[in-house]
Length: 148
Image (cartoon, rainbow, N blue to C red; front, side, top):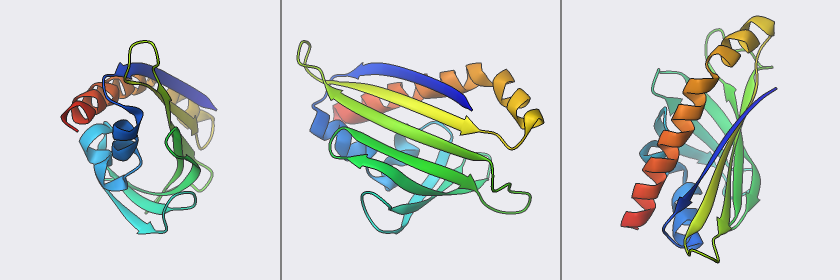
């Protein structure tokens, strides 16, 4: 298992930030590396969605954590030729109202279970990029939430 997390303060109320992060169709606007996303079925816990990465890969995802307005998490599994069922990624977005400064503390967490030791080694080499992507995502989310 490989875990990367980043957090930031967003100068918007928790309800505004929640409205952005819990909507699948908003993922491309703020989550780095996502080209498109759509709901396949359901809503809230158990919702199924299709997430297309910028590199052309598609991942079917299921919402595995949902506590309005503080937590959403989903598990992605790769689809298509060469996809390995045991490889998966979980992404969590935790929101906390910032009582002192106003706004919201946003914590992004990515947990990856690679498909074998070679993939694990490659993922470890790319940890800086994953962290940079999370920081970019937080900056984009900050801008998006500020617009409302």
